[in-house]
Structures are given as structure tokens and as C-alpha cells.
Image: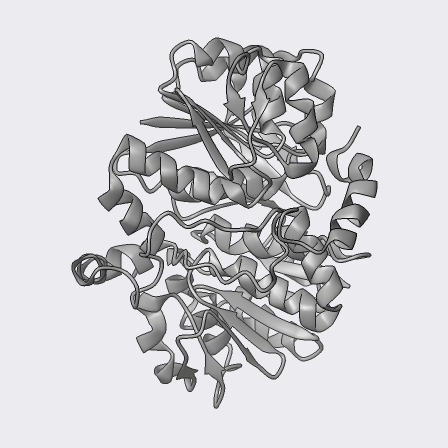
Length: 212
Length: 212
């Protein structure tokens, strides 16, 4: 099973690395990081580069595609080589997935019309404009399309994907291997649980957080 | 606050990227990925390279050090430039931290003698040989030394660190920003919770999982 993780300038690192860390542990899996061209792609903070080992034209038939989000996503919404690639490889994928605002790129590729999908909680309101019905679940399956909520949710998404694609036993083994027994220190990980004033503060910072 | 994340060949990506994704969100933080020399450093799977933007000799006084684990750690246990660097910068850090088997590198640097520490659950038995008392907590603070359990635990560690270093409000905001409201699909994320036969299976694979 070939897993292609799409990189673009300004992506959020954990969106990509969370699913990678789970999915590469599928027996026989090959993960490949794909960029517009080979070479380092910088994250949203500018503090980190991940190496794309392949250009878009070198990965034509992945079984699984993972599209991360991040402020850099905004620049692709009117179409781009990355969006064209997503649309093209989707024709033959087993699973087309996204984390955070990566779902907006799936939407820009026209793949979410009439589907349930999720995104970073600050971006859910952009889904209807792309033809999708927003869901507040952390991980949303609709056919072969799997979208996850913000940043850290890609770990949950990937474990659910292993469960569906390989089986529960494999997913449980991977969860134990990465010691995923989370202890979030606060009840603040979703807008439904966080204090209202904190939600308001981050909502006011939306353009800064999501980019644009 | 300067946060230095140490990279070495064969590290585990999420060990490094989990804490990075949290800590870079501290207001005014600068994160720097440090390798033996500048340039890409490959992860344990070989499927991914992260770019070290600085060589060890270029980062002399970070406030926070994060040492990831991964099978590549084994090659450093008898001493290496990375271990020497950890020992050297530790003299002036505010926090010296590790994820997964990164704690064994702190131990190799002589920093855990007489301290409580944790590591990947399969590596806890190596801590006494390094002078440390193993703890099964997911995140262990002992003075300025903060060690986390396997792979995914670095996210929890970093949020706890933000709480201590900056304050609970900042940590809560970061947790909401990365939408960290985990939904682990199984009760299998720790050896205490996972089915016994699964724990036995992974224990039998220990040399393969931890490297060596």
C-alpha cells in the first residue's frame, strides 16, 4: 500500500506527520512525501522543512492520499498544481483523506460535493461553499473520503483508517506501538469543551490562525 | 524562548514534531531543528527527511531542548557528538526534555542520575542502568528534566511544559488551536490497558521496535 502525503509551502507539520507516523506502520506500507517538486517544503511557522522525496508527476497512483492543512492552503483555493494532482490521483485511490484545512483542498478539487466532511473548527463554515455538509465529528468517513478535524486529529483519523483498511488488531498494535494513550491536560481541545471566552479569543484571531 | 529540537539519523518523526507543534506556538518562541550538520536527517522508516537548519555547533544556548527517540538512538549510547551537545547545552537550559527513547540519550549524557524518568514502555527497563528510576507516568517532571513516554506522548509533555513555563491559559489556547481533543479508537495505548497477548506480541518484537 502506497501512502502519499502531499506537502505544500505553509502546511502544518503535525497534520502531515501524525497520519504518517501511524500509516507507515501498516505492514508493507510505503509512505512518500510529495511536493510540487523534490526538495524541502517549509511549514507554516518557517521553522521546519520536510523533504518531498517526489514531485507530483512522480506519484501517479497512490492507494492512500493524505492532504494536510495549514495557512498555506489558502493560496491553492482557486486551483493549483497540488489541487489538480489531488483530483487526478483521487480517481484511483482507495482512500482520499485530509487533516485540518486540508479538507478545503479536497473541496477545491471538487471532491466533497454532496458529502459530509470536517475541518479545523474555525474552518467548518467554509465547507458549505465547497458543496460539503460540515460535521463536528473528529473523524468523518463518507465513502472513501476521510476528513479529520484540526491538526492533532490526524492521529485518530489514521488509526481509524488502519482499522477499516487492515483490521482492528493492526490498529490496536500500532496504537500501542506509538503509546497513544493521550492525557490532554485541559478540557479545552474543542470549541464545545473549551471556555467560551477562549473560543471567542481564538475566533477573533481566525484570519491569523487560518491564513488568508 | 529558543527551543532546540535535536535530530539524528533514525529518529522517530512524531517524537520531534509533536512537541514542536505545541512549543512553537508559545508567543515569541523560536524553534530550531539541530543536526550533526545542516541538512536533511532521515527518520527511522527512511520515508521522511526533516531539515536540520543548524549544526550542533551553531546552537549553544537554547532555553528548551527536546530530544526525540527512535531506533537511531542506540548508536549514540556509548557517546556521540549529539550526546556531548545535549550535556553541554543542558548546563544553561531552562528545560531539558525528551520523548520516547530520547530519555536514554539524556541518560547517556549523565543527566538522569538519581532522577525519576520515563521512556517508551518497552525501554523503561533500560533506565536503571543509566541511574534513573523508571516511572510509568506519561509525563515525568523532575526538576528541569521532563521525560515523556512513547512517541505520541510528546504532545502531552509539551502542553504540560507550556503550562509550567508560560501558564495554563496559554496551554489551553494552544490545545484548542491544535484541536487536541483526542479520541483514541481503542483501549490499547499503554501496556496497562492493552490486551495481554498484544503486549506480549510487541514485547517479542522489542529489538525490532527499539532498534539495536
